[in-house]
Length: 199
Length: 199
Ligand SMILES: [Zn+2]
Ligand SMILES: [Zn+2]
Image 1 (spheres, rainbow over the protein chains, first blue to last red):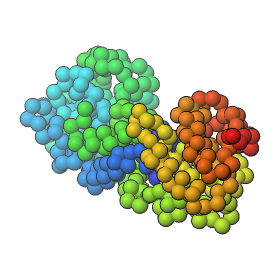
Image 2: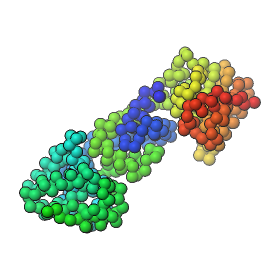
Image 3: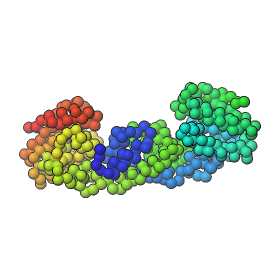
Image 4: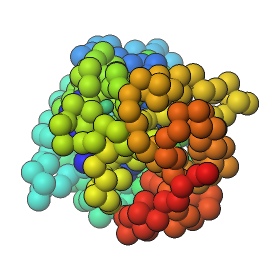
């Protein structure tokens, strides 16, 4: 509705955020430019800097501005145990909820053939390289317990078979159909410690 | 929680938006940088361009990237009738809901002495200049019917007294305590046409 082009562009651009429709985008844009121009500028610069410099950790594929993320670079983490998760948020959640000391591998997604998301799109070629070249002792599959998360875990378990590595799946303390992000840390800790081997 | 500084900065910066807390900011940031980097860049650029170039219309104070907004620059609008509103959103709403052909004056706020928002902060000095120098025939007070919106309307009515201009207030079709933004256009049209003079 606004004739002002710049404001209309901001409102359009805000709609790229999940949960923000045209109506709330308008409210946000007016709030920013009527009352918090500093916040708008701050957000513009933070986004632009992240666009320019945020990449994936060379080893675990978490979002990261350095070659290696803090966890992969840390000498305190056991590089022989890899926990596979869908999202960087899951890395934070598991680190908070458990006393896990291994490293992670972040898929940044899950297998979804209908959307054109195959193994390479979620970095499984890189995971396989690590299985080949490093002495991995355990692979913990901590993808969501959604249909696609389960299928992805199953696929990775198959992938790992030739490498004779112990493969486990976090226990179903996680409600079936649920996403890790919405689960309290006690449940998550139980699910994590109650993980079972995949034969 | 994230150790990655750039991502943490984006998450912090997103919290300047109304309705966005740390949890949804995290979800938005991950969505953007996992799945819609183009959207993030687009948003960064739109915000920055608006920060750099979006100002207030010299005449009506609506958010606008030119000296004069489209409505003030239009020869089809009657410059002798001014409708005073709190927000640019109200300009769009009234233009959609009514057949109003006058111009607007946008307060970008409302009187709120406790927050340090006095007459000058909402541009009433400029409105008074217009009352002095132009032949205004009618002033329509379309501020929200909240306590502060009513107080602001009352203040402006007093301000206009010496200029012998017809001053009207939009009718209470608008629910008392309600904000224009959340009202259907039929109600708004009734409230607008049923406006009454302020003696
Ligand atoms: Zn890493
Ligand atoms: Zn204008």
